Image 1 (cartoon, rainbow, N blue to C red):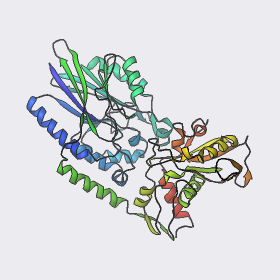
Image 2 (image 1 turned 180 degrees about the vertical axis):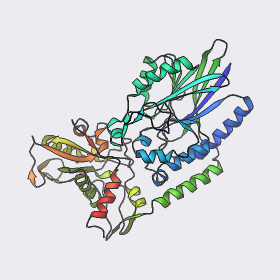
Image 3 (image 1 turned 90 degrees about the vertical axis):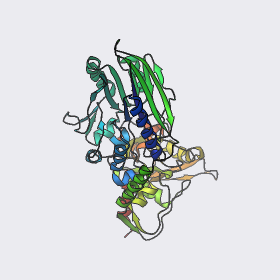
Length: 461
């Protein structure tokens, strides 16, 4: 009997508080397996990068790759934070010096070829046992296509790859950044998968989840745990006879060399962000629950960049004031770190009125949003460019006289609204989510528009 070990991480999102402890843990495990002779692989399931962190922003992901290299990862796949927050060229450049292999089956160039930096599957021979591995990622189609990719349905691609792996492999492991609902469906409907190492939905499955004969594992988010899946394979019967999942808390003594490496990469990232993008004549303020300069400027930038009738943004996307004087890339990143893209949707006047009403409600403004690219504290008030309104009573609950570019709103007319892509997800503003047409603007992020507007605008020289 052979025991195979898979150690896995997912959805770090560039949270490195526990990274040096992870390296200590991996070093201890390597020593253990050197002694017991058991084979093992170290895998990451995507969203290791997140451009909210200046380390990732400044190095364009290369710092993350250095950390994965030095930690001794064997295989990774990518998540949406790698795939749709970096351009094609930047993503390729980030992985140029990798010492691990990247598996990914459902990403193609527009010419129908897969990118040179990834493989659709691998068959890894471990002590005579053929371990087949493949990977898929969540298909954010409009975003990938805007960046020049052809992202295909992961289920369809997986079915095709499995035809090969079922013929050639003894043990089959799926690396999935498609989320737990997808993983459950794959376990139920595609024959032959032994283990699914999951990601994307940030589930912490302490002992895994069994769906029929398939074991699904996932380790939450932000690197608090290292996942461990052990597979026992009997060479005589040529069958998997046992599989177990567990998680290892990362509270070990931090590895000193890794701490030093992190400091070095952090400094490198910071250096890259020192470029001056504008010079302000005076301090510019932000206020989450009222009207203030920076959120209003952001709304104006959205309207102009996307050529909309209206610009709309929640004030909570701007985290801090900007001081007078030189403004660097680091300053812009600090006050607007979100990996969020501009978006334009057509909406009727009556829908816009409904959104204005939602945006003044206290429960909307104080909502502590997690996910959808938002890296702030609270949503804040909805602020507009090209739209004005009056409150008809002192309790701020009744709206009247909505005007769009100086004219009273026509409830039946369709207006183009430039806003943030995060409103096309979730239930925050169903009017935007359910819009029949959504035009996404990539690779620009909100902070790129803010920097552009500050440079162009009267506030700077």
